[in-house]
Image 1 (cartoon, one colour):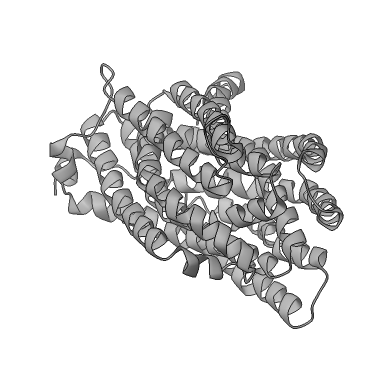
Image 2 (cartoon, rainbow, N blue to C red; image 1 turned 180 degrees about the horizontal axis):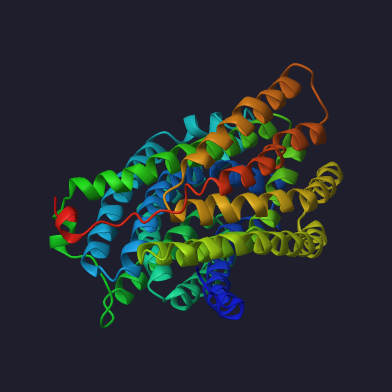
Length: 455
C-alpha cells in the first residue's frame, strides 16, 4: 500500500504544474498578441486572422497527437532511466512532426484563398486572411519541431527554461507586432500581414533556442543515429497511444473549426465577439493544461517505475485538484473578462455578444477543468487515450454539433443560443469521467526492456 505524503505530492505537483501553466500561458500569449494588437486596428482584421489561424490549429491537432503519444512513453522511460530509448522516441516524434508540418505549409502557401472560404463567405475577411496565411505558413515547421524539444524539457526537469523561452518569445512577438502592424518611421504599416511576419520571427527564435539548449551538458538531444533508428515495437507502442489521441484531437479540434465556421456565417459582430472570447478563455485554460501536464508526468514516472499504488494515489488526488482549478478558472475569467471588454475596439452589437459569451464561460470552465485534468493528464499517462476519443465523438459530434448546425442554418436561432449549444459538449462529458476512472484502464506500465525495444 502506498504511503505518499500529501505535502510532498503538492510540492512536486506545484514545482511541475506552475512552470508548465506559465509556459502554456506564455505560449497562448504569443498567439493572443496578434489578436491584442489587431484588436486596436479594425474589427475585420481580428476576425480574419482568427479564422485564418484555424489552419494552424488543425495542424497542431496532428502535432499534439504525436507529441502526446510520445510524451506518455518518454515519461515512463525517463522514470525508468532508459535514456537511450528516450532519445530514440524524441527523434521519432520529430520525424512525424516534420512530415505533418511540411504538408500543412505546402497546402497553406499554395491555396490560402480556398482555406479561407471554408470558414467565411465575407470577401474582405477572405482577402485579409489569405494574405496572412501565405506568409505565416513558413512558421509551421519551426513551430512543430520546437514543440518536440519543449515536450522533453517538461519531462527532464527543465520546465523553468521552457518558461523563459516562452517569456522571451512573447516579448519579441509583441515588439515585432507593434512595429510591423502599425508601422514606425521608415517601417510601413503592414496590418494583418505584419502579425504573420512576426510569427515567423518568433518561431525561428524559439527553435534556435531549444536546439542550443538541447546541447547542454548531460542533456538528451537527437543525433543522426537516433534519427535513422527504427523499432517496430516502439512504433507500435507510440501509435497505440497516439492513434486514439489523434482521433480525439481531430474530433475535438475539427469541431472547434466547425464552431468558427458556423460563427463566421453569423456575421462580423458574432465572429469578432467569438474571437475575443477565445482569446480570453485560452489564457485562462492554461492553468488546467499546466496541472494536467504536471499530473501526467508525475503519474507516468510512477508507472514507469512500476509503482502502481503511488500512481493510484496521484490519480485520486487529481479529483481535488480539478475542483480547485475549476474555481480558479472561474475567478480568473471574472477578472480577464472586463479587461478584454474595454480593450478591444468592437461595435456595440459585438460587445453585447462578448459579455454574454464570457458570462456563460464562467460556468463552462468547471466542466473544462474536470475533463482536461483527466483526459489530458491522468488517463493518457498510462496509455488510456481511447476514452477521450469516444467521449468527444459522442458529446460533440452526436449531440452538440448536430443541434448547433440545425439550429443555426434551419431554425435560425439567436447567436447566443447557437453559442451555448455548441459549447455544451464539455458539460455533457463530465458525468462519465468517474466510471471510466474507476475502471483503472489508465493504471499501466507501458515500458519495455531494451531487448524488446531493439526489436
